[in-house]
Image (tube, rainbow, N blue to C red; front, side, top):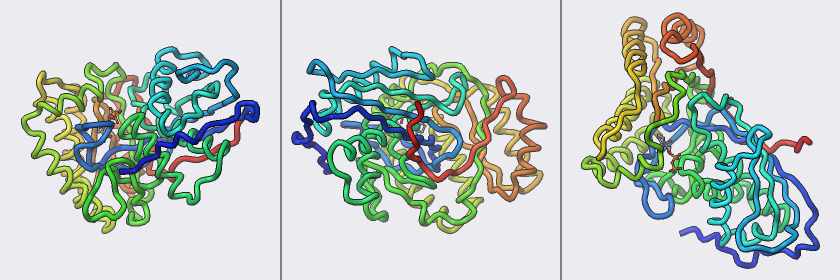
Length: 366
Ligand code: 2P0
């Protein structure tokens, strides 16, 4: 077990000068899905994801010594420049959970300014990029107030660990390329407590893979991911699913090394459909895909049969489709999207994204 508890990390308030830290973290798309958790945000099975490039959260964490000491954490969160009560409350609870690791957080007054690169209403979850950006700001804050961590890998591991406590999938966003979260016998250093990078073994074809996100519906989901994970506890297929996901993460890692885009696509699509089948077989059952999700899936299958091109889809916990394909076929695929798929998207919108290099620390702007 990793134990980051450190009661010694406290400050002499009169010595703290105000400051600010800014990180931009991308979102990620799971290739093999995390679905089901236990304990303190521990996954029931390993998962592997591509880190995206364009879909990201930009977060600035400002801090100063707190005037009056209190028990909880003093924080305000501004989303796109406006104080957001819901996110402030969620962030406060998250930071309070971190007090055993960072007791100094209650000696500070914190202001978080955050914005997403994708529109609010796009129906894309921002918890992965948001919690990853915040966790990176916190580890940088630790370094600024105390000592630098010895290695870059230690920094990332701690950020991934903290991000996981905010939102499971966020722990994979800390790394560029691809990341694995969950202990796998064949992957040294892998853990249920944080994600590890696997980008070094990524075949060149996957290094700039495309992920175009088709916005089928922007409505709020009827069942949250948190509730969905919870329902896995009573799902009759859960045990078989966790074993399958473990095997598939192993196989996906070989596929990512070898550059086999067809096998990649087969696993990818089966993972998407399995995820939604798990939702439909939960008690109570629920359905997050929409009729247009199925229409587009059929069109993608037909396109593949007609052209032989390796265009495959995946789904998150919602109705929107992610279309994954190699850069070499980008021109044809974009034409197909424009001419045949956009009609089925709400507001005829899609977001063009691709595999990215991971989070970046940015200069603080006033
Ligand atoms: C994943 N998803 O692996 C899976 C597949 C969505 C579909 O993890 O409760 O927001 O914060 O740990 O990470 C979405 O759930 O859930 C998710 P919490 P999270 O990306």
